[in-house]
Length: 94
Image (cartoon, rainbow, N blue to C red; front, side, top):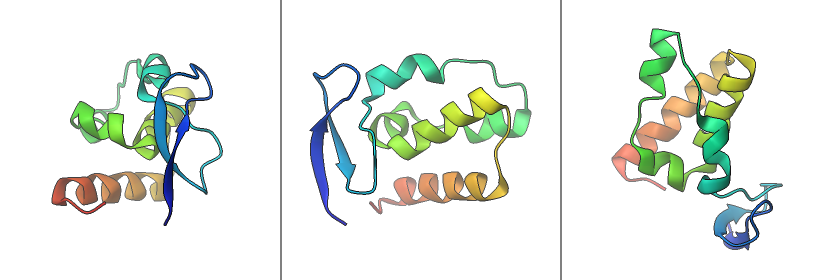
């Protein structure tokens, strides 16, 4: 998959590594305010308790957390994909 850098759509100053499948390039600094919120479910709290670097480097993980905070729930496929991505990052793939 081809990756390239594009400027963030909001701040227009930071570059973000994206693929051709992504529609909007948002940097971590712009999405940081959306990722703040209270997570009451202990399972979800444990799932989202990953190192900050993972969120900084992966927009997919940021989007899943933002969606959970916005809607209050995730589908099973979203949870599986989140966990698989975290495991790939821990093992050094991608």
